[in-house]
Image (cartoon, rainbow, N blue to C red; front, side, top):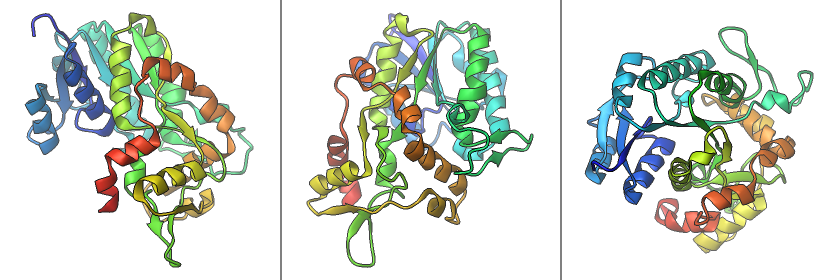
Amino acid sequence: MSNQQLITVIGATGTQGGAVARALLADGTFAVRAVTRDATSTRAQALTDLGAEVVEAELTDEDSLRKAFDGAHGAFLVTPFWEHRSPERELTEVRTLIAAARGAQLQRVVWSTLEDTRQAIAADDQRMPVIRDGRGEEYRVPHFDVKGGEADALFAASGLPVTYLLMSFYWDQLLGDLAPQRDEDGTLALHLPVGGAPVAGIASDDIGRIVLRVLQDPSTIGATVPAVSDVLTGEQMAAAFSSVLGEQVAYRPLTPAQFRAFPVPGAEELGNMFQYYADFPESYNGRRDLAAAHAVNPGHLDLTGFLTTHRARLTR
């Protein structure tokens, strides 16, 4: 342990942070300090069992974050936008993370980010609604735009040795609410609102492996590294499901407007996100170079392999 550099992992019981913590622990190059708000949770205990040091901290409490970063070589940073869906709060969290990281003099920082979709979508484009936050700031896809448009600029100005990890659509979401559903005619069908457009995606476990490689390579400081495994159309995703489930799965896409009309929190923003995938693939996919991503993570899971790994969950 004395020869291992310590990496603090924010959000270690979440999808991204959990994948990062597990990948680092499995490799053994780094020691892991896993940060969560509840060190007694089942997921936190699982990380303890794998060898992580689990500590509690709040993203709006600089003192608790300074303690979490104390003695660490580097950190993986991610913000839980979907817990509060507030750009204002996310920026507060980012500023607090930066202040704590600077105070701890971290030598490596990996920041999980996305692009500002407003760079691709004209202000007068009427295809999707504008979403305003409490400050009156206008967004198209807030959880994208606040990172790419504001948080990234804060990191760039911070002087921290940052690598920007550009995230993609999680294949993991296809195991939950977005999994194929049985239609009234008995057909098992995938209903993603992306039309015929290809979508860049990744399995969460591959996120962890990419972060491990980034931390092992100082040349990535200042660079943007795409986290992507495949770029697939809805038809190709449905074909992967068919192969794994042994039943023909149809692709019957919703429209983004239909998705935005669902009576669930965040439906408008998610509908805009899917419309960004569908209508601006040159912006979304164009930022996520497959060859560059595969060079960092050559052993990536394709969608069929990912679904095969989780087949039991799908059949339940």
